[in-house]
Length: 313
Image 1 (cartoon, helix red, strand yellow):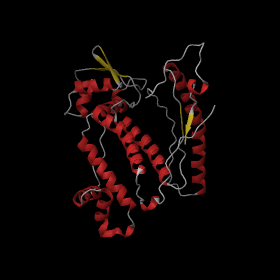
Image 2: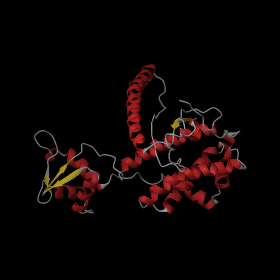
Image 3: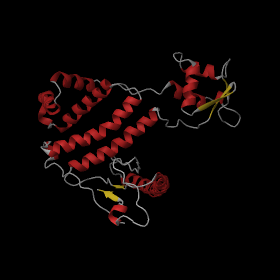
């Protein structure tokens, strides 16, 4: 199988000094940022997060990045330097810096539905003789789902909490009874856990990519193989290949990482580093699909009949 390396932009000549791009470099960078923002905008719109909230997060991220890029000697001039680097007004920078100094927003609390789930699983009074969570009558005196829900919150109706638990796949309603169907909070499409995974996994992948572009010598492993002119059936088949590769990586990585952790502890080394290893697949319709295959009697030239899989970076 032939492999090609996709061209990648050369790193800026002085990443530590914030060297500015010009000409085609600016357009390429803007195109890359647009590609990164598209799925973020899709997620925000799909889940009702308004532009103003995302804009505030983006401003704060710009201010923090600019502060990290400034020399320690900036001192009292830090606001002016950050404003110059980001294009924000001095007033906006001051407001954002003060908000960060106050500790920022408090961490989000677990949702009432997940609190009900956790209490249901943890309360000994709600377990059967085998130690499993009991099926509860939906209404009535304790023990019932209604009294459990009201013990968690008086602000949300028990019916709404039950609907949310069912929507998340954590519980089900059978007649007049409610029962749990999961042992842990599963990362559903709207759960805090799912969004946490999204931010952590994609965030670290993006940090690795950015660090590699900005560094003279890329410090992270960040590779991809991509191919086109596949059928939907082939995509389904390849998913099984990817799953098998992940299981192999998992089996090899976990024992090795644990051995390294144990060795560091035994040697008394400073243990202040973290690592994340991932594997992902993505498939979508081609923007320029090939024409229908020619008749068997007149096959197309090999170069046009098949595009080889390629390696990115």
